Length: 357
Image: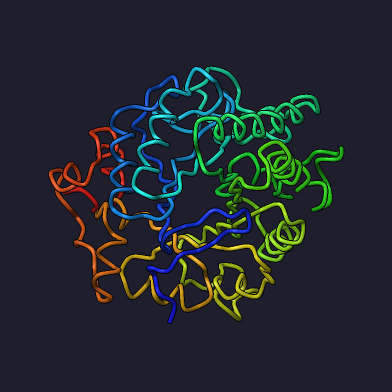
């Protein structure tokens, strides 16, 4: 049985004090110019206080035209650094690792947020997105790398590159969406080229002691499980990442595609040869029993979303009580306020069925 309170040492040397990561959660609490708000600062600081070994920000856009939702925290300009420095200081004061998720929404960027066509690997009629020029692809790569350099200067222990959930790096990986005919389209090697160039660039510019992870999701948006596993194994073999974050939506589910239904999604990824690279999964890990089940399956640490919203100190509660169950939803606005959520986050959660009373 894996002890949820045991530490992890990543290949870069960073030490995570336990097996709990705060999942990167959309909360819409920051300012529209990308600056960190006091509400988002409080929300994240309280999760560090609550003993999450790694506190990850929401998806933070690396270009202004990559904004995915209102109130999104940005990392696209040095003008935003003051808030990030304050945040990393607060998180690290509680012995947690501070990690920012680097993001670009691509064709999923709402027109009303950027007042221009969103961008995509190639023209996309369904979303009215325009294809990036080759020069723009290279600029996108450089802006991901620059954002990581900026994050390091602001005190983050590391970054996670968001390649999941249908956002721009997923769009490049997807044979359904990516119709480019140059070196960034066609074969899986070409479709994954941008992701690898970003990862390699971050490692080169930020150094060997900087924590570097990649988030991928194996289903939806034209993703194929075997292709995603192939990308994962290549990332591991290349030796530039410290962890993989596999977003499964439900960590215990059987794959959608019939040809992959002989084993669970989790088992598909457990078959990878991780070497020294650590990995985590996200999706319906709700209580202490779930946490233990995931850790005992061979996953190095758990990514907690919903239960981290309900209890800022979920890790502490689980460590103290191996039978801990979170409060039953729906919950009151008052409970969420006590757990450090601001008004905008609570309003956002009201869109979730039966979450807020």
